[in-house]
Image (tube, rainbow over all chains, first blue to last red; front, side, top):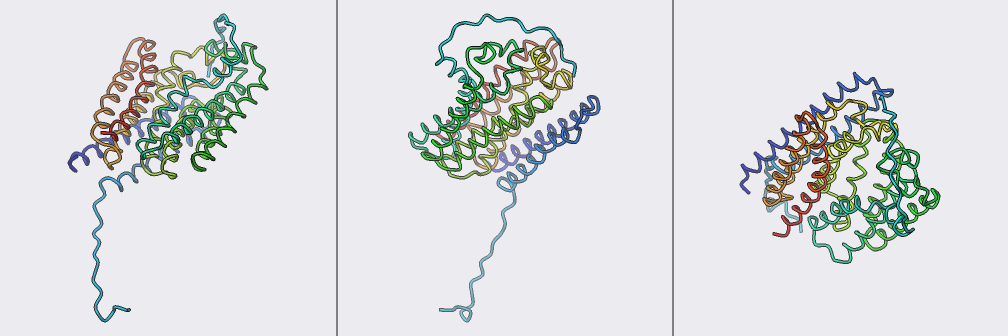
Length: 84
Length: 299
């Protein structure tokens, strides 16, 4: 597939995923305020842990998908530096 | 949470053989989907031999079946008050609870040995991890204590793709992690579609499902956003070259239909029918999505 299409697919998907995750966290904040659970910190943890894992996975997929290539130079050694 | 106290309807038990009860303890219909999400990743990861596929299928069935049997042992009290589960072997009195847990632990132990011996140690460890997560984290802890029970508990059902991947490669990578996350994020909209229509059952059993604790509106809103997240997540592996065009088109079509279904739940004046549709279609969605991955790799 063309690299432009791949870039568009990637960023459109990442935008949808991030928006959805933010909306899930906002909804969780609303329900935790309204329901006043016995262990609010734990409930927050249940919502935040998947979000953190998702952030790490998206970063890894960015590195695999659209990260600009790192230029590597190999400088030939000078004859005097060669060792047998 | 304000559980309703209406009694569950009284289903008429039919006589069944011990063999059919043992099979029903494993919940074969649920396992059929788990096996699709186990075996399909094997063909995405590489070219498994027929023997490896068969050992993984057998080991996967026994491990998931063992987890389901132990779940029925631990949930025998609430199974007795839910119409949906009242006819299971323990609440109906057809099997002793101790026999059920012995059966569950026995076949899970057999599965661990089988996978470690004929496949590899990582595969056996992941399958056993899924068993422990389902039994202790989901069933024993979260199911009765948090409305986010199936959010975190969904990880138990997401182990099968890792098992299949590890069986072929002996390791895990980014693609395997995505397959795990796809099943993980598929779980909330799938189970909340069921929970919306089974609120009385869950209320009677005092299981704090999201619609009972958060209310229907907030649950449906989260179903929608989990589905958006899921559909977005399914196309990302295409961007890093793990899957191709056939899969991309399939993921968008299947995902578009799922989004449409959840949108109907969100906007309909009566969500009952759309929610049943989402519950049924989401099963088909996950199976077809994983089949599409295999086809994409084959063409």
